[in-house]
Amino acid sequence: MAPKLERRDEPSTAVLTGGGSAVTGRRPRVIGVDVARGLALIGMMATHAFGTLADDGAPTVAQFVAGGRAATTFVLVAGVSLAFLSGGSKGVRGRERVAAAAGLAARAALVGAIGLGLGYLAPLNGIDGILPFYGLFFLLAIPLLWCTPLVLIFVAALATAVGPVLVVTALASRPDFDSAVDPTFGTLFQDPLGLLDQLFLTGEYPALVYLAYLCIGLAIGRLDLRSRGLAWWLLAGGLALAATARAVSDILLYRMGGLDRLIEATGLRDDPGAVTALLWEPEQPTSPWYLALPTPHSHTPVDVLHTAGSAAAVLGAALLLTRIPAVARALAPIAAAGSMSLTMYSAHLILLATGFLGDDPVLLFLAMVVGALALAAAWRSRFKQGPLEALVADSATAVRRMAARDAASGAASRTTAKILRSVVCVAVLALTCWAGAAYATPLDDESADIAGSAASEDDAKGPDEPDTQTPPLVSAPEPAQEPASPPAVEPAASADRYCELADQLYTLDDAHPDQPELVAEKGASALSELPQAAPAQIRDAVTTLVADYRAAGVPGVTAPNGSTLSQAEATVDAFEDENC
Image 1 (cartoon, helix red, strand yellow):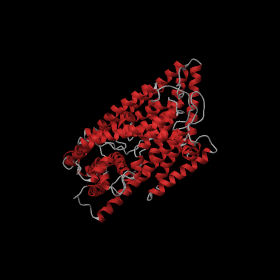
Image 2 (tube, rainbow, N blue to C red; image 1 turned 120 degrees about the vertical axis):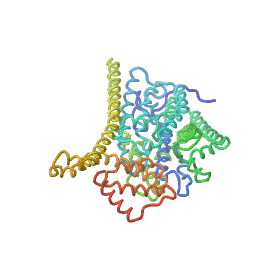
Image 3 (cartoon, rainbow, N blue to C red; image 1 turned 90 degrees about the vertical axis):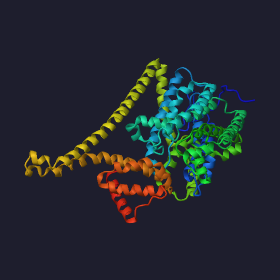
Image 4 (tube, rainbow, N blue to C red; image 1 turned 30 degrees about the horizontal axis):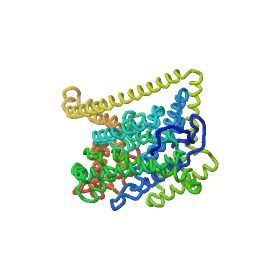
């Protein structure tokens, strides 16, 4: 008989992004939850170290085992932890609700800020960070704290059915969008609506899809995690859901011809290499049959159901194994790393950015795992929380207590009004920034076009007009000053855009080393725009480099000769060192 969706008391634990007490007080940690989170951390390290496809074009072992599953286990377990932080199975009511919501909003802001800061390392480590998305997940979780498990499961089912369709539609309408560009503070201030679009729809971890995992975790966290029966149901039910999702995908793709239609739509030849790439690293969706793919991070209903089942099974297995004292002691280092996952996740991104052991993924993976387990075990032997966990938890606890005091003093309505006013002000400010950017960009382009056309007219009329209007001695210096004026204005704007496009290509190069064809394909839009965006003094050199990129990615295109290419690289490097 399946466990009922009822509420019982259970120990609480810390959310992925920082420990801390629940609203009702600090209680012993649920070690199985920490172990599941630690396993997810190791899985993400493996996928980041080994990549998606091996040299022979086959998926790596790390991608086969942990691809997509590690990140979704993180989010599902975060939902469990959020349930603990908001009162466990009893939930919170009355004034405690305001306090819990305020504390969670503080966590969201801090985790998002850490993620945006780490985004500056993306060009160096080639990793799409999840922390900015986590900040949004936590904000979306605030109204869900009041929901019952059944309502949470309904919301998860809705996100599974509707979220992938919205994401695929958004991606199909933005063929030139590059999700490999990690958001930073610059994105927040320069393109706030673009950042929201990335976080909700077009990014690597779109919130409209990942909300399903968060809701499932919240629902599980409202149940009795001390129950052996619940752990077995999570394990068996998760495995059954994962297997069923894959079986449905196989029927749709192979028996109903979906894979053949996808190959036709993408223009791929029917060979093993092309099929493998389609199943493990597909490009932008071009057919409704894309929704049948089980590819990790494809955000299809099949992918969501399979990875959600896998995450639930991992949590169930961890809860069962940690009931055995000897096994729990053996898994203690993994649990320690799981309890410090924010610190360890951030540290491994920094390590990857250094390029340490980048040529040996096996040693890199072992160094990250052994280092994380040893450091976490040593740290937890002396401290209750990791450094980043303490920062987030202490700040969130302070905010929660302030909100609780306001609510206790009868100021709950005033606190709510203040929060609403702040949200409205931020929204208005974001819309104003976006509207200004949207209005200014075409205006600047138009002004540049007008200035360029005016300069052309002056150049064309210059020899005639001075003869009829001014003596030759007076007009002689004028042609020398005419062309000097536009370069003083145009290169600055062109240089900024050029540097932005060049950074996009460098990010793709870092994300796909030794895959020039893939870089040329994904960066086709940037390659087309680069020569036009390049200032006049490097335009010829940039055109040469773009031709070299396309020669690597397009069969039959001849690359520039070596001496020309070397000279072009030197010219562009000197310009970028000074201006980018």
